[in-house]
Image (cartoon, one colour):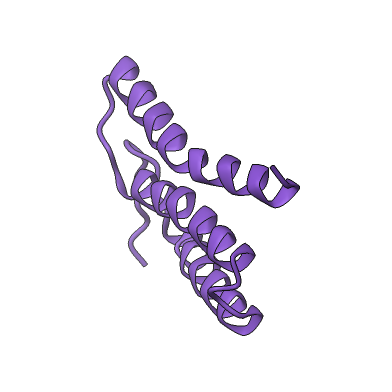
Length: 92
């Protein structure tokens, strides 16, 4: 097996392990799945898929950059809108 194969296996395991650990943590704490968890799971699933497709030369570098930039921009643009549970919102 080559180094690329090991990287692809690790990336492929990231999705199921990430989702499993998030669900385990949510079940243990009794908390629900909110918007932040959905965003986290999206990143945990999407980035390894893009990595694997890039390593297999299915996607070219411009497509990879566009996909990663779009997801990162969407996720980071929502950071300012976050209001923790139980926190009061200011009405301007």
